[in-house]
Length: 524
Image: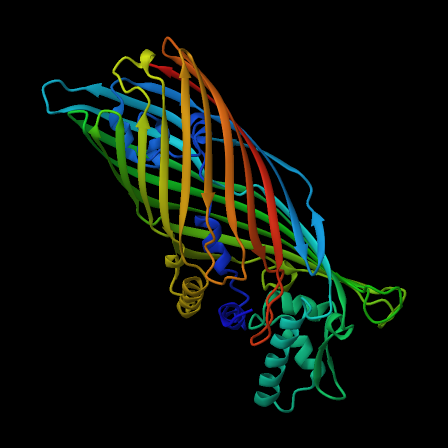
């Protein structure tokens, strides 16, 4: 493991009361947007195709193909599961099912015969541009590090500082004060309260009972839900059916909920000072953002369309809250008849309320080059035979930035996290390709998309791949489309981070998701 991953652990030292991590930036940007059933069936490659409400979120110039109006609704279903590999052990998560909404809305297109810009279109729509539904589970036996190791290190730094500042203060008083001192992270204070962490008053040594075992069973479960739902407005115009220009304005609304359970336990059956410690966390992140999308499509010849789209970063104003609980079983320590102790995070706060943190996030830029080829490009749609289409997308994942939303002295921390994002992530290319064959009123479609690794470190393996297929029916201004998408992904998950220069241990995650999308549409 190289120094790029060490950096993350270093910047977190003493700052764990603030929860933002580089993964938060990636979660908001490394995703596969939804769309209509038709767009998902062709792999999401809509950058040059045009004539689809999904163009609002890919290339708004495609709205310029509209000369009439339409209404679209796209309900969907997501079924997710994942496999985790950690310290040589494989495990599988429970299946998760969530309903979601794909691209839905209204397009108003009209002709303007008196102008060289022969047609124009306005659109209003709603789409799930990021789906956070997921379930992750992994476990393993670890003789290298413990979840409590960075907590013990933080407590040791605190203990040493207090002893230097107040040489007459007893260890008992230091512990009593530390449990409610906001200078320490909530996790460390919970570990101290439940005696997972302790201070040997005879030697002045800070220690962790789990770490002292030398080997522990580790287990982590994460269930997530929510997503980013973007409300979009778009306008496009068409010059001589050759050049199409479009502008889109997006308002992404974030709703993310994550429940995490992490457990360390004694792998032996022996009675000693530690049986297990379980940490549970409920994390919510909500907010709203703003972005813009610029696009053009050019038809050099009748059957060929070339597209270019630029997505500005989304500027998010976010608010997060973390509620947590720790339970520790010390077996023979203290009172063997009552070995279990527990504490909730709100009990450690002055007003018995978990604090909320506000911050701003700037997402990456996106640049999309597209091309499509019509198999029979004619004005009479009944004679059209289908198309082949493809997108190449470049995303600047390392450009995400965190900023303080209020003048509360946390600006330097957010700068450090932004620097970590820059060192951990890189720009990456994503590829989408698909096609459609038309048989009078029936269409058959297929597609493929591949989202490449956003990590700079070659040891961290990550990618996302979608394979899709679908059918459509269109007749007399009404259509219905059905699509199935099989999504496969790889990622890395860190259960905790130890202090540099020790390397971090992480799990390799393979997730599998099935998406079913149904779209209804009608010409108005």
